[in-house]
Amino acid sequence: MDTTLPISFDDVARAHQRIAGVAHRTPVLRSRTADALTGAQLFFKCENQQRVGAFKIRGAYNAIAQFTPEQRAGGVVTFSSGNHAQAIALAASLLGVKATVVMPHDAAATKRAATEGYGAQVLGYDRYREDPEAIVRALAEERGMTVIPPFDHPHVMAGQGTLAIELIEEVGALDVLITPVGGGGLLSGCATAARHLAPRCAIYGVEPEAGNDAQQSLARGEIVRIDTPHTVADAAQSRSVGRHTLPVLRALVDGIVTVSDAQLVETMKFFAARMKLLVEPTGCLAAAAVFAHKLELRGKRVGIVLSGGNVDLARFAALVA
Image (cartoon, rainbow, N blue to C red):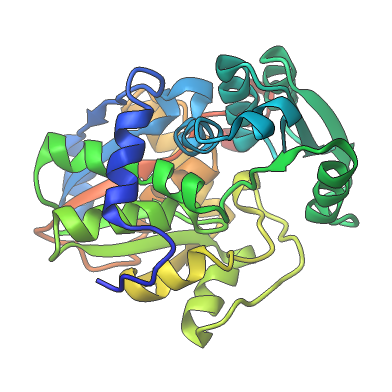
């Protein structure tokens, strides 16, 4: 393994110890129907049942827990469409750190309410016209706060990888591991853990067809920036992967595939109807690729990350109607 990468398995292992007792050890569920549809043995890692309703608490807590006394006094600032926002707000409250979160005006009402409920100050922006990173940098300089971005930070990446440790500990070595990908924090962390624990495991990311910046970046070997994509997968509307995540993706990931919004909605319906699970559109990315036969998985043991379940019930009903 390339020792020059931003994170190592040791970083993920230390994060796993650091977040113990804070992040839930989420269940791994099976479905005979899903296995029959795909010809594979599927293991669904249910981060939709995680604290804050998504995997993001892992990276957020791991990052803030490593703040210096000066950073704790200054507080934390970030930008997010909702899941990282809630995670930063909760982690900060648990650690006694003040938090400010920049969220798009059209973020899910439940995500904004939860973020404020955890004690964070929420500031709005237009996701299609304004650059949240620029807003956050200005706030950090003005207020003396530390920026913890949604994905492009080694401590965040390492924290997200802890779910792969749990998954492989529970079900054993996998032939394939598939995760959603937005900015690459989840995929890079999980790839780091999986490559160490199951060296022969193939690793794939899945993103929306409308926003395949990670796929383009992996193919070209450099960061490809796009306009904010229009997709129901609101938590994967990133404009690019990160400078920390891309090297890990290039070194450890076998490929990235895409799925349509229609395929995401069908997958949401499957989880609700057949497995009694509420999974948000972004959380369905990996499973949607499997159900759409985007990869050859017949006869293989496949880990699938359901990354989150934060979706307004009214929106859920409208999507699946």
